[in-house]
Length: 455
Image 1 (cartoon, rainbow, N blue to C red):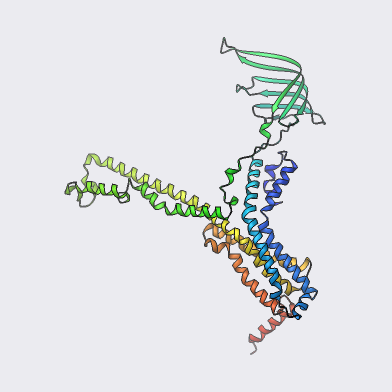
Image 2: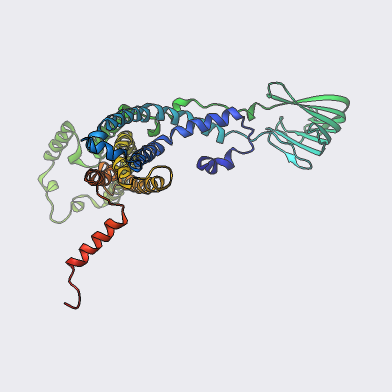
């Protein structure tokens, strides 16, 4: 639904077939797996252990001498297996689905709307043609009072077709539209070769005439998918790592590039041989030329000072331009670098999120001892909302550079992991954390510690 709300205005009216819509939905739904899978594991673990606690199965297991941690261990191994599959899916399937979905979405967004003739309006959907239909019958084929302006020659309205009645007949392959016109006239104007100022008009009557329009421009043309492969959403871990290393090499080479760019303007930045040659040439100059009291400009003859100042100003402007271009290029590539780095961490976060949310859900279900959809669903949504908010906040902070990338991307997991261990400890000791009596007991103990005003 979110996908359709975003792109509805760009997709409606383009005659998309059911297969294209299904294909687009399936590809886009693959990108929702990192969002849905942790929630599913959290909800399933809470419901399972809550149901077992409600039916006193956990009590029977503990009475048999099996601790909760030992009972969770096989399920934890299964979750590790699920996490491995999630990483493989996130690393291989999602980049492939993104490539297919976004390239298909690009083609659909840039395709033309379907050819649709409306009564009493000029239609210019077909290139170099302007078509007006006065009336359309209910069958959708029969048309009346037709006017067709042909601009294919590039000389304006030099070809006009008028007909009283006709039919619109689409070709079997939908590549062409045939207007079968009846009782009409064709008007054509052409420049007289003998006199460039005079024009000839030809008028032809027809009883029946087929005008064929090419509708190939309305067909969805698929763009080469190789054009989208360099986007970070379409890459796996190894490709993202290669892009990250490429930027680091580029960043390390910026000082050397600046030296090359600014070398012609700043002597100390010249390469070794060029700098040594210039120093030797300066050493050969007269001593009075190389020594001055206040400014080097005093050693330059008056008739050359204006030219020298113009040259210096030009060199400064060129140097500033080189630095600005290099800085802009670094900022642009730095933004891409942050996207690559964030996406690289995302490949691993899904697997760890599944593990952490299971470690929260299993003991939480044992504590609340409620199965079904009611209370487990509410608690699962609360914890998942907390996880999602922390995850989105950390990702935005990482992309803006407010915090290191690893800190922002792993913030949600780092916050929830201690909560998971605390819940496991409480469930192991049969603590009634979510019980009303437990909170009343804690409040009573707190009141006993705080001295009253009478005392």
